[in-house]
Length: 298
Image (tube, rainbow, N blue to C red; front, side):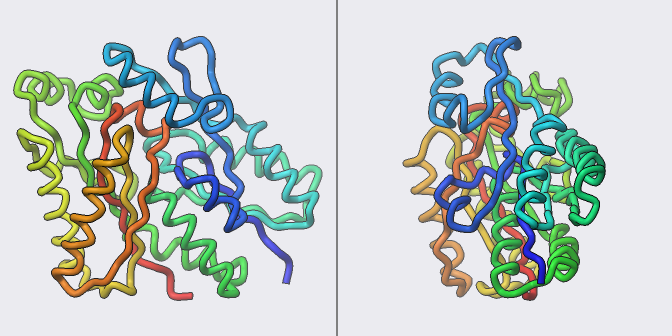
């Protein structure tokens, strides 16, 4: 059986140690703080340095940019030269044109490597949810899934993915156009924290709260509600915490979520992933929440 390589754009927000362990190739996004100099995330600027810059410059709004066609083509070519087929997993098209860059690169690769199979998947996800989706791809690959079998499984589970999260304030969401301006103005005046759900590639309001603690309470409630709705056992799904600037807060929230799961009979140890600049340019430095998805059947 011909080997295949799993590639993701940088939205997957997996730690380097995990990418190395599972052989995941990542094509990074770019970030700029001055709208002139674009830096490769994780290469030219670290996540820690980027978050510190946001905290130190609360009145400034950085931007991100998708990987170029050439970035994807370079990664695809390296896999093709190694004799490997390719499965490339990209952020939801509702947030970025990364998928289109990858598809264009796929077409260009065929000119030089016509026998290399390439499949580009719109994950309809982002950040830590995309990360655990990529890890599911690796788990099933390592369990012996063939190329076509893995693609079928990945397509079958992606609609089950959810992110339930909150942010420090609503300013970045407003500035980035992720919510209507009227909601942003109201949020700024009232000091509210939005609770947001991502499903099938889009974000939806799941309520508001007047404090960080209450907003996290509501996130916990959404997790419990979703697990009750799906009827999943603790073996049926993958889950991870995503955080921004404050790791200690993420640890405390992880403990709360593990206790919540234990209260409904689920024994889970939850990983904590650092949300990258691709998403934090829209959330600000204090996003915190959970990604959850049904595991594949392989």
